[in-house]
Image (cartoon, rainbow, N blue to C red; front, side, top):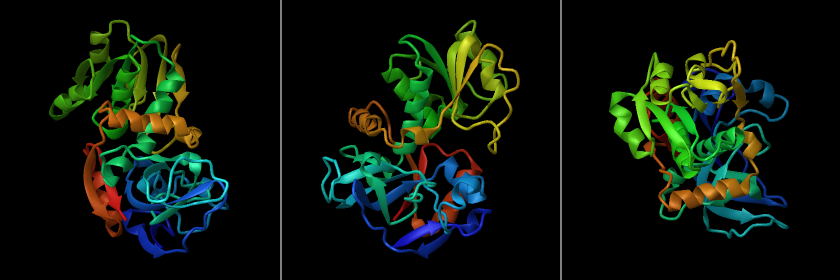
Amino acid sequence: MKAVGVFGYGDPEVLEVVDIPLPEVGPGQIRVRVHAVSVNPSDVLLRRGFTDPMLAGRLTPPYRPGMDAAGVVDEIGRDTVTDLHVGDRVMAIVIPVDPSGGAYAEYLVLDARQVVRAPAGTTHAEAATLPMNGLTARRALDVLDLAPGDWIAVTGAAGALGGYTVQLAKADGLRVVADAAPADEELVRSLGADRVVGRGPGVAERIREVVPGGVEAVMDAAVLGPEALAAVRPGGQIALARSEGEPGTSPLGDTGKVAVRNVFVPDYRYAHGKLDSLRVLAEEGRITLRVAAEYPADQAADAHRRFEAGGVRGRLVLRF
């Protein structure tokens, strides 16, 4: 089968199209014929070598990026508990350091709990934007455990993770203040944010103008670090989708009385019910699946270059 991976780390050019053996299906597993995968920040971290300590010794090169996929059920292993059938359209959460490898491949063999039906009426590309970012947003809100009516601030609200966080927060009954550039204000309002403030330096002060004393929590999807922290009231919380020390992050410094919640989406790799609930919300129109552009898989390097240039709204998707 065709896959896209890296033998050595570096710039987008290290991504190679390779032929690797078709994975065999074992008990409790499902093989998916992949048609679309999305490009995420985690894919860039793998390509650059940040995840090498977790990959080396567990898998063999080429290492494959990719944390979510959409396609069709190709085979179901014996003793597998599932309501899916061969030929069903599905989406899946994928963990590149697991034995499955990353999602950049024509076929994936996954634990059945990682695979759910794709939202009805969606394309493969649209479905591929949901699992990783949607589950990250869901995990963040679950960890924060806010009460209906509480205020949450979402940074990077126009992006994929930020957008899902806004919409899931509204589904949970929270009040949302979100940041946006002028060109993205209408988009962020359409996602359901109660109030929108300008992004950039001073965003914490603008959030506090909306919510005097500070919000109960921040989901820092834009990785602002200390700038986002300043918007939280004493006794509040900040959720970090990327841990301190990862490329692009800034040290929070003294967090005072604000609790830091690290959000690790692999904790939800087997959260079948959580992933399926995202499907339901998508079918109800309560969360929006946004595809920024599609690329053939053999143009993965071009997709990574576009992603790293910034300003992408929604997700870039590779087609297999």
